[in-house]
Image (cartoon, rainbow, N blue to C red; front, side, top):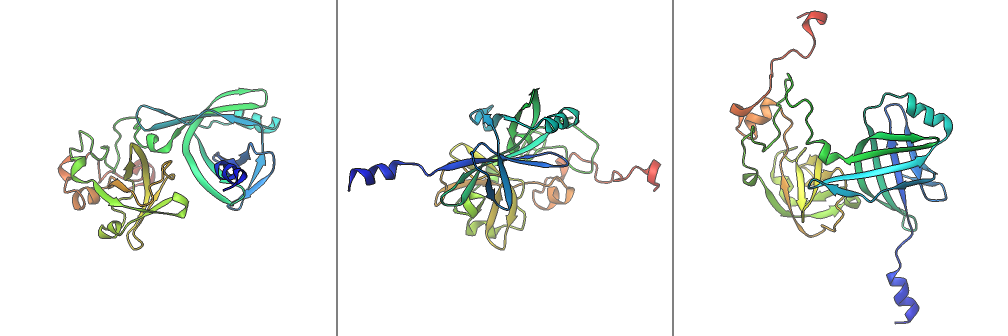
Length: 264
């Protein structure tokens, strides 16, 4: 093989990062790439921006800090908005192949606005699901987290190991094993592979699929992963799926509407 051919094999495809920055009333579609990019029906506008490396804190928690320049009037919107959380999705888009891969999905908050530059820090959505503030609330749903000390169930007794195929550019995994369990058995659960974790947003029994909040960084196609079920925190699921109603920490008969306002 010629030297030039060897060099071509070592060259990476040209890619751009696409940022969906989602506010309650509008979404910014930005890219540090010098040209406008259209992907998944959205148009990403070139923007001066930078981000830190997506780092891990406290186990699997992923954190990233993003800074970008904005138009003046948009900056004023940020300053005047009372926004507790900002959602962000980062996609790595391979231009020549017209293929994108989500590398980060999370929520964050503004940590600084200077002139026309806005900076915010985002945490991976999987980590946010573990945060409970306040720790106990009066709700018809359970206050426990599946497999925690109050729930009392043994995580190891519910783990499922199976070989998976990657579909939809990594946003879903397929295995015949997923068809052996009731619909939504794995919804809100998670997948583990080589110390990487992904939340399961949907379990599709009919098609043997589970959908992930973001693709794995590692290639899991044809690999054995460990899958854990999820819980929607209702008493029905607690009783029928886990036979654990004795540890249900919720108030299923609490009114969904304030009776002093709406009546009984």
